[in-house]
Each structure stands twice: as C-alpha cells, then as structure tokens.
Length: 554
Image (cartoon, rainbow, N blue to C red):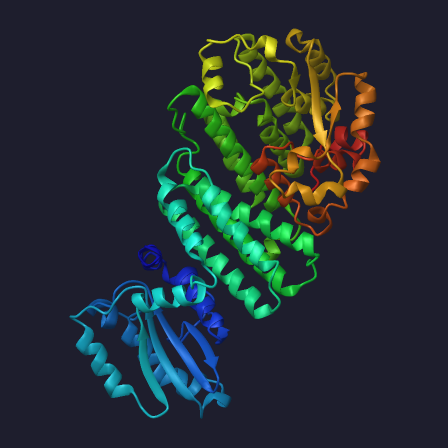
C-alpha cells in the first residue's frame, strides 16, 4: 500500500523545485555530496544536478513524466539535447579541471518510464556514447520509489505502525471534518525518536524521513484542494520542531536550524497555494460556499485565522531576506479585506473563542496598517456582533456545532448561559488601547453583560514548555477580569511593563519566530498572549498615535 501511495505521489511531482529537490535529498541520504542545484534562469548546459560520491562524478538530467519520442528528441529542451550539451560542451569546457580524470556518470532521471516506442533510441544512444570514463544510465519511477522506501520509509525509520497511520491520514483527507490525529501521532513518534539519537547521521535520517512524510501529505492535500489542511500539517510540524529545539536548547545548532527553515519553506508553500486559490474568487460577492449559516461563518473565521497568522509571519523582520516569498504581508491583508468585504460571515463569530481570530486580525492590522483601520474594525465588529445578540444569536462559550445550530435557529434561549466572555474581553481591551472610550463605555453598559465577566488570558514565559503539550496547555496562565475595575485602571493593568519584559523571554520572541505562539493559539484554541499587541502600544505615545497613525513593523 505504501508503495502505491509513494508511486502516485512521486509521479505527480513537477520537475523544478519538487522532483529535483527530492532527488537531491535522496542522494545526500545515500552518501552523495550534492554540488549544485541550478537556479531558474541559469545556463545549465544540460546538467540539472551535479553530485559526487567517492572518486566518481554524477551529472543528472531530470525530466517530468514518461520519456516519449517528443521528449526524447522533439525540441531544444529534449532529453537528447541535454545529453548532447553535456557530452559536447559541459564535459570538455565547463567542468572543473579536478574532475577531468574521474569517472563520469550521466544519469537520466524521470518520475515516469521509458516508453517502448522510444526505448531503442535510448538504448542506441547509450551504446554509442558510453566510453571508458563516461557511463550513461537512468533512474525511472520504480527506482525512485525504491530509493524513497530505502532512505525515508525503511522499517528502521518508518515502522508498520507509522505506515498504518499514514494510510489512514491520507485515506480520510476527503472528509469534511478531517482531524489530524493520525498525522500528529506519526510526527510525535519522530520527535520521540529524535530525543534518543546519539549521532548527526541518524538525526538527519529521521528528519529526512519526516520531511518526506510532510511532503507527501501536503502534496496530497493540495492536490485535493484541501489547502487549510495542508497548512495545518506544516504548522503542527513547526510547533513540534520548535518545542524540540526549545526543550533541548538547540537554537544555536546549525543542523537543527537548517531543518527548521526547510519546514518553514513548506509552510510558506502551503500558504501560497492557499492564497492562489482564494485570490480567484476573493472579489466575488458571496464567493465562499454557504451550505448553512453556521458552517459558513465557521469557514470564514478559519480563513480569517490562517491569513492573519500568515500575514503576521510575513511581517516578521528579515522574512523576505531569508525566504523566497511570492506574497507580502500587505498582499495577505488585501486578500483578507477583499474576502471580508464580500462575505458577511467574517463579521459574525459562532463561538466566543473566535475572539482568537479577532485578536490576530487586529494585531496584524496594527503591524501593517494604521490605528484608524484598527479602530474602524473594532467598531464594526462590535456593531455586527451586537445585532446578532439582540436577535438571540450569541457567540457560544462551548465549541459545540450542534448547539450553535440550535442557537442559529433560535431553538434555545442562550442568554442565561452567557456568564463570561473572552470575545467581549478582547473587544473591550482594544477599545481601551485605541482610546475609544465611547465604545468601551457602551460595552460596559450592555444589559446582556451586566451579570457577566469579560476577561482575557495571559501567561508567563516560565510556563512556555507546557504550551507545546496538548494536555497541559489548558492548565497554564491566568485570567484577567477586565470589567471589575474602572476603565482607566484596567488600562493600567493591561499596559503593565513588567509583563511585557517577561514576554520577551519566550523563546519564540527571543529567537525571532513569534508566529509559533500564534500557531499554538489557533491549534489549541487558547487566547493569543496579549503582550503581542500590548508591547506595540507601550512603544508609542498617545500624541504620536493621534498625529501620525501607527505604521510600525516588527
């Protein structure tokens, strides 16, 4: 079964940035030294990848799909043309002189097969051009499958239990309520194994196997247009990777950081595919599917969360210098605004803890736009949510879909259950920080909040290790009640500089990957640590905000 899954996956890979990278990784695992992966636009003289092992040199010609008469000798990009350039030009004039006396191996690599109609041409070419110091051979789809099995999915690295979980992980991808349980179990096993390794070679093999699994599941999810699932796969790996690095204090270790960056690149790729898809209908009125009002709003807030977190990542200092990015933070926010302007579901949270997504939205707008835009959004959300509550449609405290449906169709009076609210705590805090005292007073005057506590959550950097543990995260931190003091006193409590000083000791802040904390909040449905935005307001003064607006990047 795993062989069939891998065959389908490898056969679907594009030549550039997919098949070539897979081959490069496989060669490294097999003891080869990869000398180059040509960049787009560079003259290659037929060579797509150059490697060496022992005293031998390997020159790879990489093509996608079956070798046919056309791809063999049909145009200037044909396989035969590439081989001719290698034999006639590269070996004589472009190759380093130190390689001249070495054995040269020219290898044709494809994620297809050599069709029977062109096999005589291929065999004839090999016979005519093989010589004592030059050997011509091929790596076809079955060979690639075997290499992947050998290097990434052998029994040592990928147990029968992992194989079973991978099959289930992929099998259920079409389910509307897909859960990551099987995938997470596989990833957890990898990191348990990493805790036991004693050599860099073994560690790299485990990371390579993990990367292959992540590539396989994200590729399959994207092919099925399950882009949000693909992003969730990458986010879970990043959270797990950061936890591993933080636990073992590996922030200065080059190897672990390189693997972290590879996983970040996969996160970027999944988000870019998601944005590509959303862009096609973002300006269409009611462009998102609406099967029922509750499911529609849940979808809108899930998209809101993904785009806000990715916009925050793109806002991080130096992200565009380290990674090859298709979109900017501004692009992500513009896309989000287009969707919000054309889909009403973005303004009506189903659950009280959808305040997490509002926190993320306000935060990235604070980073990328100005204070006026934040004020406008806060006011709009207060108005829209108030209208729904007046119609009996409360953002419910329990994350229960069936209950949300009952509230939507007014089969239950939820007013008496509305004893506490994180959502209104977020809105209230942002009215104070943006100095909209009128909105703050109106929230405190709402009759449905008269007997309720509005609150926010916070935690200390000393509790960070437990934030990565599913069963421990809900026991961390403390709650601030925001409507038990006068607003001016509440604001002083919010802007306590000692809490901001502690916030800087979180590893993801200290080592410049703040997105991890945001991913954790969405993954485990825990409020965003409010110091993310509180520190931004501490950094600026009231007069500067009023006169100039706010346009500070992290």
